[in-house]
Image (cartoon, rainbow, N blue to C red):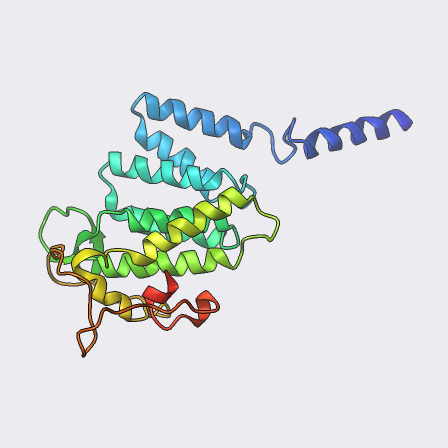
Length: 243
């Protein structure tokens, strides 16, 4: 009886430290699956790699520091498979599973911000990137920008007080960059307004053309506009003050 107890105790300890997997026979550990997915990618087997990275990304027990990489690799596989129209759905599903993981929210925000912002409305649904077969061309620049800010704001509220300071610094620098967004140069006047993070703007039925530099924005008296530093981000009256 004592021998059985000791064997059971030993298996429990090994399971806790991840040396064996008691959740089911033949189920690979996360790192094993990650290695297989990487090898599949190197071999050009993007469909197989995507399925493994997707599984990792949607696993709530995945390493909080690795799941963001898994998501990005899954999205990279979709792009290589020319399945761009599936990236938004995957991102949102993963966000739903890991909504308290600030690192995942952060990287998902960056992913939205750096996405291809063009697409088509087909049968009432947005199809990101090129779509064969027609449809109404639209751009998602402002929509993706707001979604990025929503995720960054959510992530900021979930950063532990004892989190690595360098990681926090990187986060807030990127937050400021994305908050500035596409409102630099010729469109810096937009920073006088406060983005509405409660709802996503509609897709715009036009091509996006960056505006050339026009100088600093001025008020009605022709004086340069300066943004006052608020006490907290939540108290900012404009995007410029939030930066």
